[in-house]
Image (cartoon, rainbow, N blue to C red; front, side, top):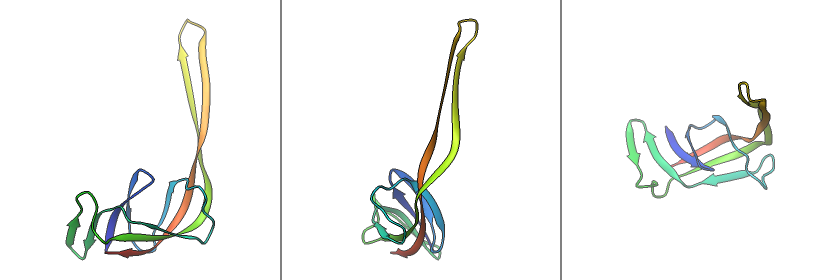
Length: 105
């Protein structure tokens, strides 16, 4: 059984026991459980239920494993040749690691 759920603007395929890295969720602590009710699709052993826009009564329960995980460093470099123009910028995305405990449908 799996479900497609929207978490912080991104869609994820979730199954029980699976770990995910989602956009950083503020005000969460390690061990805290969070419920998401915007379930877009549920597959129960071949019986697919598609929501319009969400499946009624379905939700996903996750537990926060690590509230702040920094992603890989991304370097953004812009240059225009022969114009003496160079900009170097970079960032590290922040994620929250969660583990799926239950898919209720």
